[in-house]
Length: 92
View 1: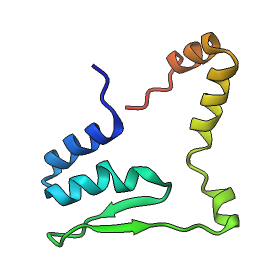
View 2 (view 1 turned 30 degrees about the vertical axis):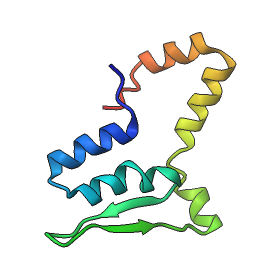
View 3 (view 1 turned 180 degrees about the vertical axis):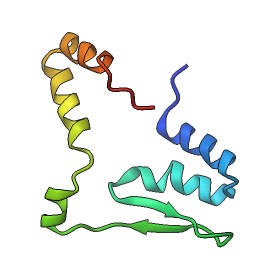
């Protein structure tokens, strides 16, 4: 069974003791745009945060570049992408 990102977020939220509203945030709102997250400090309610980067910051801190490169590789040659993924790119 494949777990989607929202399902995984809800499961993780339960393990972390997040409220229903906080689980909804990480399973819905945060998934709709880059830079969105739930910040939780101590026992205070979680806060929805939208990170906005300048063009310079985007070029330095592009953490999604690897995923985009893999997607392009998979689209160009699905067999090659599968071999590359098996060669040690363990996301866990």
